[in-house]
Image (tube, rainbow, N blue to C red; front, side, top):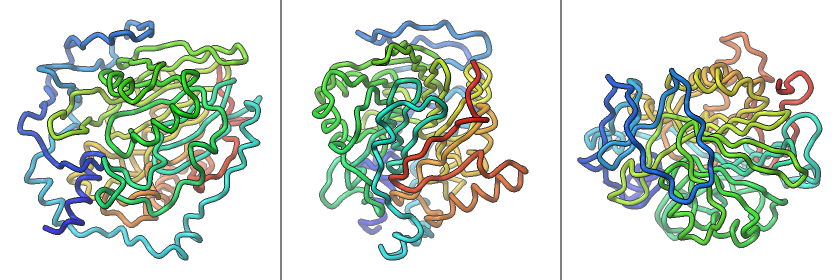
Length: 394
């Protein structure tokens, strides 16, 4: 087995962590039961929990591990990992000259973030699952990774970016809040967290799923809110607006070291403003919970939904959606406009590097949906989305 194959699996299967280990004690989901299992309390979190209504899927914490409570989840077995290692990658990432044409990296026009738009969501795709959005007086950054590799080290292990970030953390305009979906290295990057904390200090609010607060505090973050699924917290913007951050469910898993499988929770995020609503899908396989999110918090003005890192399906489908499923999530959550993320930055899986964008267009056509409903952006492109006819309802 080559070093490159080991590195590729480390990234794709466990968020690009160096020490690949599928634990024999990995938590197994009890798909026949939806009963509530007590979750550990979030010590020090200042969130006000909203008691979930009947019919909402709650987080499950059993024997020290979180579980996916849906029949669409399947446990990861070492035999499948080895099979994936040996499978040929069809990513075919070309040379820089071709990439500059097919996936250009633009210089961001940060002046568009000087003032929150009256209508719509000011949006910039940094790359992978990192998106900067501004609406209703609040500026939010999702799963920030500005490092060259999604890995514990920036030396020679871990997947390297084939598209550089369009800016550095130092270049960013004022950010009010960061949401983290889970602890895999391509979504929770130590160097980016340290740089953001250095630039914005205590004024920056961090919203994370249960179990991640301790790690965040250990990096120097001060204002950390740790939330369970369906738990809500109010954020008071500088202009006096109140925006609600909600940790909503998704189907994924967590791992950062050889021994911490499923020890921290994962989630999507719903950010509810007085005039607009934003959904961040994070990293997820498809499951029925997105209909619940749409029913409780939809319609959304804008959603950032993953569209890449999905092949081979026999291995990836429980944890990563493909474009067909991405469009289904778009419909389930009642998003009026969506932007595709989690593609075009790192080679994590086996599909051709441009296929997510192409398959997304095909699926929209197949379902007779307006292609303007679900788009992709260029790295660094700043635009206002979800405006006019896509304006959120009350």
